[in-house]
Image (cartoon, rainbow over all chains, first blue to last red; front, side, top):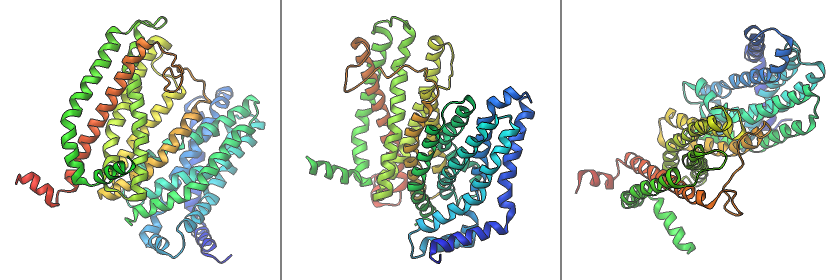
Amino acid sequence: MNGPWWATLRRELTLIWRSPADMVQPLFFFMVVVSLFPLGLSPKPELLALVAPGVVWVAALLAVMLSLDGLFRRDQESGALDQMLTAPVVSVLPVSAKLLAHWLLTGLPLALLAPLLGYMMQLPVPALATLTYSVLLGTPTLTVIGAIGAALTVGLNRGGILLALLILPLYVPVLVFGAGVVRAAVDGSPTQGLLAVLGALLALALSLGPLAVAMGLRISAGD
Amino acid sequence: MWNTLKRWYHQLGSPRYFYRFADIVLPWLWPLALIVLAIGLVWGLAYAPVERYQGDSYRIIYLHVPASSGALMGYIAMGVAGLVCLVWRMKMAEVMLKALAPFGAVLAAVSLISGAIWGKPTWGTYWQWDARLTSMLILLFMYLGVMVLQSAIRDPRQAARAASLLALVGVINVVIVKYSVEWLNTLHQGATLNLFSESSINPAMKYPLLISMLGMWLLYAANVLMRARAEVLSRERRSGWVRKLVEGH
């Protein structure tokens, strides 16, 4: 429990924990965006249940994306990022610890909040479990893919909208399968296959993603 | 054979040699591309037989398929250039990556627009969230993403390396997007051209299609060479050979 990986994980968790606003903001955003839809569309339960999988998923995806904008910025401003890249360990190690910490304090709470919002969007109760599983399996993939974009835009001062342009197209598969599996659950079709595909995307993101993030950070640091 | 290829690869990796090569090839490539494309289009639009079910409206295939294939191949080529750029840090791969994006994005847009025009008489709608249409739209977004990222970073080498990584991730994404949206119901007709087995298209319609595809790819190649040549000049503006070229002695 003392290696560089654990040290980075502890540091990141402490940092996020001590500025709870950063952690709460994406959750708050998630709730606000979802609650705009019944007001904008119509509060009819049948209509809401129809659009709920997509609405909850799009809102979760945007929340993850917005939370990633500052992922490396503070470290870059303080110089900690350069230390991380020049440290005598493979930079994939601290990067993966950072991503895990970020997911634990944003993606995981989003997944826990999702069934509540799904219920408010009139999703049938049996589908709520599937919604939770899908967000649980999907958000780590979103975090990893988004971190590639955050790494590439870390040095640029108009990061926010640029980040969205870069990574939203990359989020399409997760959105399609994530919302698709919830729709399947609403229809009463089998969901294991689609959940397995989400898991496969997660495996792909976890195996190649941290390498790409580390490489993106090196490129941004102008190696 | 292998050694010749290797020598070519290394020679074209040198900006100066590449500039000379592009200077010799371009005056021939432009007219060749335009002539081949014109032959394919005129043959297809005016002389190819009428399709039994779609009538004359199918003829837009002679623009639609070349544009779509060009857009797809261009992005794959960008991924390859990106890989070379990240692994071997080859300068010319960076130049190529930048040169490939604009025309590829134009082709993706042409493919979408011509597809919409074709869709109205055959499917009764300009737009449908069908698997192939959606993939092409996402491909267009990813072309734009690479271009936006490249223009946001001032240092050209750093911009090229960042775009390389994005293009590589993008290539993986194109494949996954294509299969993921096939879960939605597909309206698009299956592929009618097949290199390795019998095509389901009549030969009288196939040959003009192949010729216009070839013409479009040549046009793309000419555009890329021209952009790359300009980029080489601007990157190497401080080097001796460019000064000599500009001052003319």
